[in-house]
Image (cartoon, rainbow over all chains, first blue to last red; front, side, top):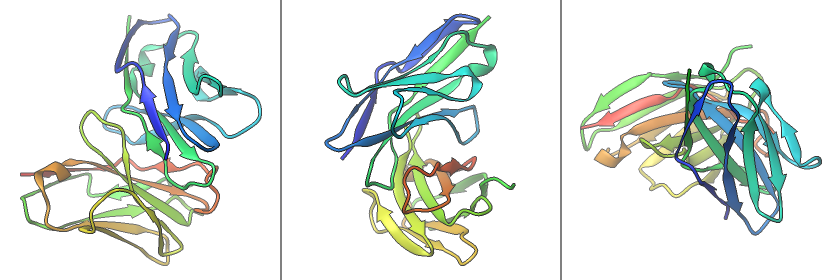
Amino acid sequence: AQSVTQLDSQVPVFEEAPVELRCNYSSSVSVYLFWYVQYPNQGLQLLLKYLSGSTLVKGINGFEAEFNKSQTSFHLRKPSVHISDTAEYFCAVSGSNDYKLSFGAGTTVTVRA
Amino acid sequence: ETGVTQSPTHLIKTRGQQVTLRCSSQSGHNTVSWYQQALGQGPQFIFQYYREEENGRGNFPPRFSGLQFPNYSSELNVNALELDDSALYLCASSRDGQEIQETQYFGPGTRLLVL
């Protein structure tokens, strides 16, 4: 079974500052990793995913994440945030032979002017 | 291309009642997954339907059941509602349940309140 730990429940950040959201996973098998964003009163939108290949993954809206197998981490970064990035961010994992996503508890990002 | 839609958007029920939530998958998708998101938590996998058959189930009791129809739309039924069933219920569709790397596209959810 796979599980995800998001190390920060809330991250306040000023506009145009960088942000990093931390995600660690545990699994006994090869995994696929995902970051989703949830804006208020909306469903989840995929930001990016890691399946294989390059460990640096680029996603939408200027986000990127780096897969680190030795540290079992998949941290999400953005070099300069906007007010519109205020949202809940979820890291998720699935086993390579699995069909379900296991989500972390989420990180609330609040961007202030 | 039409995205994933869910109905109703909000619902209030009382303990012991039954509820049916509906999901229309994105065009071209044959797989639907249901998740429960309690307040302040991440989504929890309930089950997945692929070509009208249940393709896997999470740690939810049998009173949570589902259906998938020939047009790949889906229903989630919950019997004997309990207070802890209050949550946002998310539906996600994808192109092929056999290929996990296919992205799951989520609908806006149905918020259920059980009193």
